[in-house]
Structure formats: C-alpha cells, structure tokens
Length: 115
Length: 114
Image 1: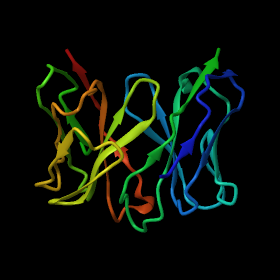
Image 2 (image 1 turned 180 degrees about the vertical axis):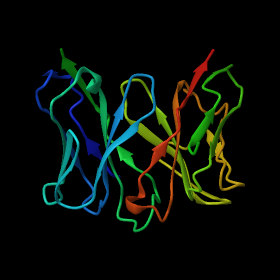
Image 3 (image 1 turned 30 degrees about the vertical axis):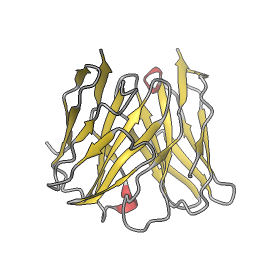
C-alpha cells in the first residue's frame, strides 16, 4: 500500500520568512505529485503540481521533487498570515493518462504564520 | 459556473439509518472519487469510478456503496453497516485526458451520527 508521510507540525514561521514543508512517499512508481492547502472546515484546494525532478515555481510557491530520494517539498516565500492552513501532500501512482485509483494523501502539516 | 457540487453540506444520521450524499460535476470529467476525512487526519479513499457503470473500492469501502449511472453524478450511500460514519466527506473528479490527472474537490459534506 502506498504511503505518504508528512510532519504534522504545527510548523510556526514568522511573517515574511520562508516556510518549508516536506513529504516522503513509498511508491517508486509514483509519477504525479501535488500540494493542496486546506483551511479548517473547508475542502482542499490545489496549490502546486509537479511531475519531473527539480523545481517548479508559481508566484510565492516553489515545489521541489527528488524521485531518487522519494521526496517532495513545498517552499512558501514571503509567508503571509493568510498562508496559515494545513498543507496536504498527495501522490498518484504510475497509471498513465488519468486519475485512475486516485491520490494517496499524507495527514498534512499544520502551518502557522506568526504576524 | 463549472465545478463539483456536493449536497447536503450538513447531514445528521440516526443509528441504523442509511443516508446518501450527492455529488454532481459539470466539468465533463471521466473519473470521480469519494474521500473521507476525520479530524486531524488526511484523506482516505472510499470508492472511485473511471467510467459510467463502473467503480472500484478504495481503502475504506466497507459500510459504503456508490453508483455511477451518469457521467455527471456519483452519489455515496453511507449504510448502517458503517459503524463510525461521523466525518467530513469529499467528492472529487478529474479528466482522464487532463494533464497530470489533477484532482479537484467539491466543498464537502459533514455527516454526524446522532
């Protein structure tokens, strides 16, 4: 069974600093990796997706993937209080072309941005 | 607006009662999913469907049932066999041809046993 591991936190970061969130996964066949943000009582919203080794940047967010180490990370630059949420790492399997058996989620890291 | 609509947002179930959560999408997505989330926990897959009239069990299917009679609809029934149904239920979908098979979520349904 696929496993996705995250530090549950809370991770406390001062406003304006860089928040670094980490995730490891067990299935070497995984090809698609996602970061979702979830506010309390709300559904997850997609922040970043990454499919190949290296960095992918989108605004203040950077996703990093290292398939050899089975490691995914999310960096949030210039952290804002509105970034305070739970961040879920999710991994798909090796199925080509679609969602197939769905995503396997980590339990999430609770991020707190201190004003 | 395109999206995934779940209803009801809040639902109360009595012991021994079956309840059905609705999920409708107008995104023309092929695959649909039901996840369950318990407080402080990640999401766990209950059932998924890749095409109409076909669906597969996820990790925690016991006590649940689904149907996929239309591409747009994937209702979830929580049966009396589910002994601990109080949770946040999330419906999601993706297009099989969509790049990277990104999954999008509805707003969720809260189910409480009373």
